Each structure stands twice: as structure tokens, then as C-alpha cells.
Image (cartoon, rainbow, N blue to C red; front, side):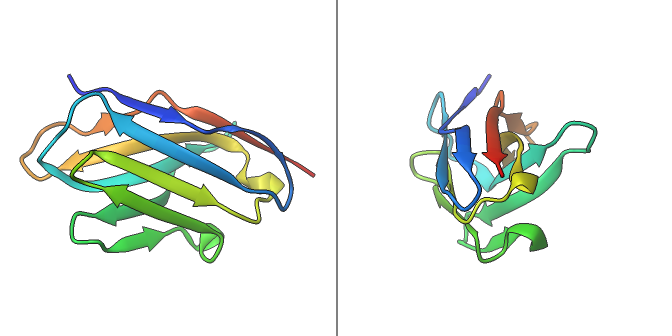
Length: 117
């Protein structure tokens, strides 16, 4: 089973930046979409950003202009550059891979991002 490992979370002041990275335990050729989700206490998990294997990126309205997703499908890695962070960005961030061949999606274990005001 594929494991996704996230890194780069931490504590930052409002206005600061963090870069999250996610790598698969093995190279995968059937990835269709790579994405980042987040879940704050008491809230449902929500999509933050995603990128398809054709290079099409999608962002939640709340992060447009501040976050940038980049993916290397040949290496099965995906990053999320987060700038101008706000306290409301505080959450556990999860990376996710969806596959075009019907394989169940993969999820990382989550990395905490905390933005102080």
C-alpha cells in the first residue's frame, strides 16, 4: 500500500510563509490528481488546492493568490507554498492522491500548521 509522507508544517506568525511537501513511498504512474486538504478543529475536511496530471490547478477561494500548489508526477511528489498566512489557515493539512485506474485514493498522516496572530 502506498504511503504518503508530509513534511514542512509548524508554527508561524500571521503574514509568514510555510512550504509543505508530500512524497509517496514508491513511484506511482497512475496518479490523476494530487491535492492538499485541511481540517480545523470542529470543521469538516476541505480541499485547499489540487493539480491534475495535465497541469490544471484548482484553489479554494480562501487561499487564491496566497497558496501555490506544484506537483511532480514523475516523482510522485506535491508541494504547497503558503504565503501571507492567516490565523484562519490553522489546521491539519493532508496530502492526497487520486488515481485514474480506480485504485483507492491515498492520504497522508497530516501535518499541523498553526498561524499565530
